[in-house]
Image (tube, rainbow, N blue to C red):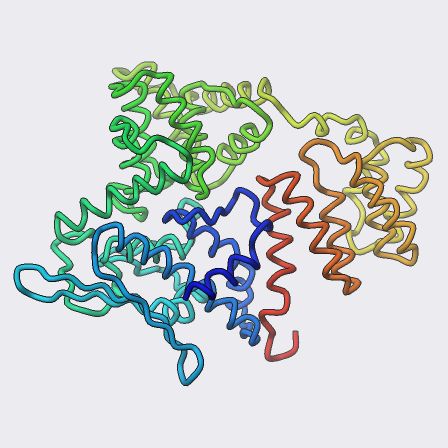
Length: 464
């Protein structure tokens, strides 16, 4: 088991930035989610696994098993794992046992089987915990691996075997539920470097890791956000500065829905981002379609005028306030480059993306008139690499790597992609890895690494 975990982590190490960190917490299930994302998309589109793909899935399942194993051991339970990959149907199971009231209780999860049958082709409704169904067609929801492991941590997975008592509600018996709750809060705090023993923070974290009504009834994490706003701003359980420090810590969480929850709550509280990385997270949370701005506006009204009904245009007023916060926040200065308003550069948006010659013919004279402009050089270099002037284009793009604007990895992504198309995969991976090192929060850089890593792990039976 350990060798499978180590091999899997060696594949993804240095290629997932801070979006997925193998820190041994429950939330580092995101390491598997990020790694399997492109494989899952292809599998849902009819692809099959190659031998390399099977080995990768086995490593991912071993990693999930390891996370679950660590949790059960922390609870003081007797836990063993069984792995059989060489003969027949591959198996990987976690077996938990305990003596309670003179009776042996067992709980068995066949994690590798679940990875093949459930995680690679998740159904529209994901049955992860006893009597609870989580829809996967909403951006508000965590990844399939999160939902799956959530059920295993609560020892409530509908796919588990054994006579372990399920209890009358999600979470099982009261003692089991309390133990799972404490461990998940511990793991959240470890993930974002919050103190483990601060009860005020732990009270807030309860609402983050355990949606009180389940995700299906908690559209956009609205109830959790309402609770955070109440306990930080309306009926505070801690000083406002401490509450803001808590939310800012959550901006470092591996899970997207937690980062969105924190950024939106900070906007409602009128707290500005501190640096460009925060600004990007705020914007992502505000503009993502998984949570209506009107819900945020209702919470802001509850802080400012709780006893009256808000005016009809209140949500629009709030959006204008939030946009003003972002406009004054630390920003990405490169977005203000004058070239984006240049008429000839704007013409690029009117061209057929497949007409490479048209782009070259427009960009070449533009570069002569603006020889020092990084964006024109990068765009022309990428287009030259798609045509006959491969060497000139590559030289131009490599020069652009040296002086890339802050938080703008376009040259890296373009160069790596063109190298990949030329079959120079090792060189392409080095370029993508450099982008992740410089911009560890940049999703496209991480996704480019995973795209290249998993490129040989699936095939389409019809040859497409």
